[in-house]
Image 1 (tube, helix red, strand yellow):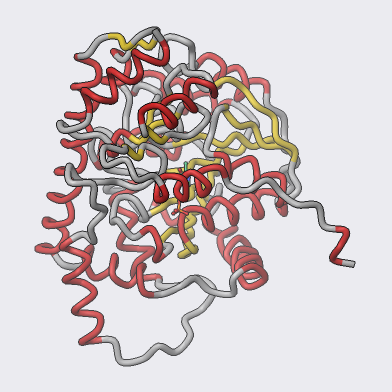
Image 2 (cartoon, protein in one colour):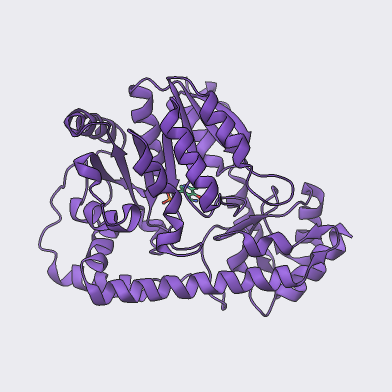
Length: 391
Ligand code: PMP
């Protein structure tokens, strides 16, 4: 029976990691993998997390099961960062821990489907796993353009989709640091988006995977908070894998805003049932470490400082690229106004291949680059190579 399975295309980025590892050129540059890197090319464990982990080793006295909701101390500790001072949203908010932001998106879409959502609108390009999750959960995907050719967000396209949506539609929106373009909505655009959601029929699903990597913790949550303040219902998938550097420990959460606090027990029981059928309960360690950080003022300050260092470094790389002006046919100026780890360059697959073969520069075929793969020692080489293949 298993011979009926059709081979699936391999994950292109994973294939790229292998090609990069096998490349012996000493000046090779990796702009593919989606992790933060220091100017030395490392992805270190946050010092705040190291300290929290040491405390966990000392203090944890049992590894007995938690429930499908995971570590609720973690889930609550994160809320003021995501939702601001009125984090409880008048008692209308339920939350649970998930395996990474991926688990949060998966659970959000599965819950939406149970609640009657049949179609999810998604701006493209998007994180490729969004479309895979929608297909796997079994909802229809409808797409609209996320950005304009000039490197700004196409808020009008999103507004038209929200206004045209019917009952049974959801709209999935990146909260900040859009993957793969780095192009975010402005605060004014978010105001209009929140108003459109409030007046329309669509269920908002917000994906916040990079809070603090764009403009700052508060700034990066602006859109999410505006939407949540305006609408009766919303789903929020959150990842701590980038902003706490927890990647492989799989730290995330799903929050659900209900129209009425009385609906929360039914919502929570559906979330528990979906989680039990998928992963039973999330892995504990990473969420517990984040909880220890967020419950300790000193560790929280250390974490926020580390996050600010990362943000400043990515900003510096973006400004250096933008200062180069153009590289061949590529205008690098818009990169200064984009946010987070990623930007997408207007290059062809052939040009991406030439960058790899002729210049040892590795990036996704879509033109997405991880700006944290660049530093003062390799930016010039990158800009020259880009000019060479696109000029
Ligand atoms: N949403 C978006 C937009 C992402 O880019 C990612 C990670 N690449 C995720 C969710 C999931 O992150 P995690 O590694 O926590 O599963």
